[in-house]
Each structure stands twice: as structure tokens, then as C-alpha cells.
Amino acid sequence: MPPFLCCVSFLRGPVGTHPLRPVESARTHVMSVTAQNKLLSFAEARQVAEKYAGTLAPTEPELTNLLDAVGLVLAEDLLADRDFPPFPRATRDGYAVRAADVQSVPAELRNVGSIKAGACTDDSDVTAGTSECIEIMTGAPVPSGVDAVVMIEYTTVSGDKVTVSRGVKARENVVAAGAEARRGDVMVRRGARLHHAAVAIAAAVGRPELAVHRRPHVAVLATGDELVDINLPPGPNEIRNSNTYSLAAQVNEAGGEAMLLPVARDEADEIALLLGKGLNADLLLLTGGVSMGKYDLVEEVLASLGAEFFFTGVAIQPGKPVVFGQIKLDGKTTPFFGLPGNPVSTMVTFQLFVRPVLDALGGSAPEPLPFAQAKLKQPLTTKTGLTRFLPARLGGMPENPEVELVRWQGSGDLMAASRANCYIVVPPDRDRFEKGEVISILLF
Ligand code: AMP
Ligand code: MG
Image (cartoon, rainbow, N blue to C red; front, side, top):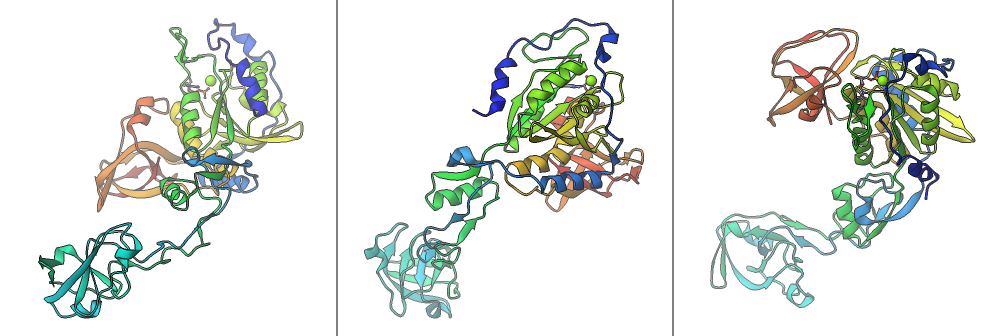
């Protein structure tokens, strides 16, 4: 059991409900702020996160069942255990022919046999002579003596007479043995994330277990006096803690293992206590408490623990107060992010800055952000100064992708986030885009 899990049982107790306390108590343990104000542009901050990611050692490899490894990162090269394909493979149902026999059409050939996929050697030993052909199925071995497959659609059959109405070139509709990979070739490289296509390769080379990097443990700590956890009834002026769960979902989707800490009240000693638990993880994510408010204590607490800050704000909206740094404690260095508490800010800043760090811990190079372009369906007006990531919906046809903002009440609007499938990215020097203009988008 990783040491981090020990603290999870401590976390199971009732958390989240607390009577209103006098406001003075919030700063009882105020710590001195040593974090410099480091406000970066979006591009600078992304670069900082990627550069830092490049310095991280990945988690250790472990042998994992193929389907449990989906979404994780290969810690070994996947090698071809035989040629791919292992035999010359027909890619169409039809007739195996010599291409030379069907150069002038219609051409009449005599069918001398039939080969199905998985055919035993005897069947595929059937060979065709001049003006002969062999019925063949997709996935079947193409016998010697023929060099192409005519699709069944271009034939008419009467008894053993096959009339071909369209010629083929040599090797057409046949994949030569070893054309995709030779035995011993690397089919998927170490460091690749295992999505369904790589899983297919692992299956094809007969690997029920693979060496993949362990899921990085990511501690998630929400802060805020107004928050109650989802199994408790909120008071009239309280809200349920949704960030812990959206973040855990993002972490798990990205190949991490979220470790949920209970909500910390806006009190320095409580934040420090829970934050200390989170430092056992490979990465610590905090939400809330990083803005300018009187009870936004997260940065102060981090600073009091000797944190090194790489940035303490990014010129973006939503998500401007985002904080990134690392803490060295007892010989262990733990990267952390203080994400703004507004739910959409939390989601955006995870994708923009946390993701490359999590990728690196999990063993892969940071994936580039999935930017694309689409035409605006409506004009867009905003203010200059910040790079904006505004929840939007991408639609339209392949030749004409269109995007429009979803209606939203600002960075706290969960419904807007759930209706969106991308963000419109507005550069900091533009305050207006016209209907029909092409604009950048960031896909989820
Ligand atoms: P903060 O970043 O702490 O100033 O919070 C900004 C806004 O986000 C406030 O309206 C908070 O109530 C809300 N918020 C903070 N943390 C959470 C959370 N864990 N779940 C849902 N909303 C939150
Ligand atoms: Mg707060």
C-alpha cells in the first residue's frame, strides 16, 4: 500500500459541516507570504509547466493486465512476435488472379478452388495457372502463383467460369507478409499511452500483461468554508463540493489515481494539516483559496511550508489566480497546483497546466494541447488583456466546422461547462470577433 493511502482512513470521518465561526478566527494562524507575485502569460505558463514536466521521473513500471492498462503509459517497447501480416493477406472478398491475365477486360478465367480466412495449408496450396483464378475471402492467405485480388463486385460467375470486368495491378488488394512489421520490430514504443489501437497491437502480439507506469497518485484538496461534501446536506448558504469530484474525474481520465482529501476550512492550520497529508502523493492539487480574498490562505500556507513558486497567476480567464510550485519536505519533492475554486476555472487550469505534469509523472511526454479552428456562428465581444477560454460548442460539417459560445453566468456555471465540448480561445489583444470569422478552439 502506498504510504499515502494510510491517511485516507483518517479522512473518512464526517467532514464539511461546520457552524459559522467568527470571521476573526480565519487568520488566527496567518503565515508570512514569501511567494513573489509571478503573473505569466498563457504561453509562458504553459512552457513553465512543460519544462518542469521534462524534469520529472516517471512512476515505477508494474506488470498490469491488458485491459487495466488502458489509458496508462507503456514502460516497455511492444515487439512484433512474428511478421505482420504473417502471410500475404487478401484484403477483399473476390478472386485471386495473376494481374497479367486481367489487363484486357472482360477477361474469362477458370476458378480452381476456394480459400477462406484461416484456411489450412492444403487449401492455400492451390495454385493458379495462366487464365486461372481462385475464389478467396478477406483475411485469407493469398497462394503462390497469383499476385492480386479482383473484388467480387467486378466479376460474374457461371459454374467455374469467372468473367472479370475490371483489371487489377500486381499486389492490388494484397498485403505482403511483413509489410506492416517484421518479427522483432517495435510496434508500439515505450512512453506511448495505451489507447484502443495500441491495445489491439498488444493483443495481436499475444501480451495479456504489459509493463506500464503505475498511475500517479494525485491528492485532491478542496478548500472553502462554504463547502460541504456530497453525502451531507448543505446549509442555506453552503454549496456542495463539486471540484474534488470533477478534478478526480479529470485525474482518472488522464491516467492518474485521485486520492480525495476532505474539505479544508479556510483556516491556515487546517489547510496546513490536510496539505501535509497530500504531500505523500506524487502530485497535490488544491482548489479554492488562491484569489485575493481575506480568507484565501492557500498560498500563504504553501509559502510557510517553504514552497517554491513557479507562477502565482496567469493572464487567462477563467483561472487567473492559478498557482504552481513544488515543496521539498523530508527529502521528498512534491509538485503542487493551487487551482482557483470556480468550477470552470478549476477544469480549464487542470487541462492547461496540470495535465503536462501528470503526463510526465505517468511516463509520457506532455501531449500537445488539442487546438483546432472553426468559424464563429455568432459575433463575440470581450475585453482585451487576458487569453480567454470560453465554454463553447463545436458542430457543423467536416468541411465547415462551426463554433458558438454556450450561454454562461461566468466561471461558476457548471451547466455551461457540461453543455460545452470545447473552449473558444480568445487572444489577449482582441476584443471583438465577427460572425463567420475563423477562431481558435481548444477541444476537451
Ligand atoms: P475561491 O477560489 O475560494 O475564491 O472560490 C471561488 C468560487 O468558487 C466561490 O464561489 C466558491 O464558492 C466556489 N468554489 C470554491 N471551491 C469549490 C468547490 N470545491 N466546489 C464548488 N465550488 C467551489
Ligand atoms: Mg474560497
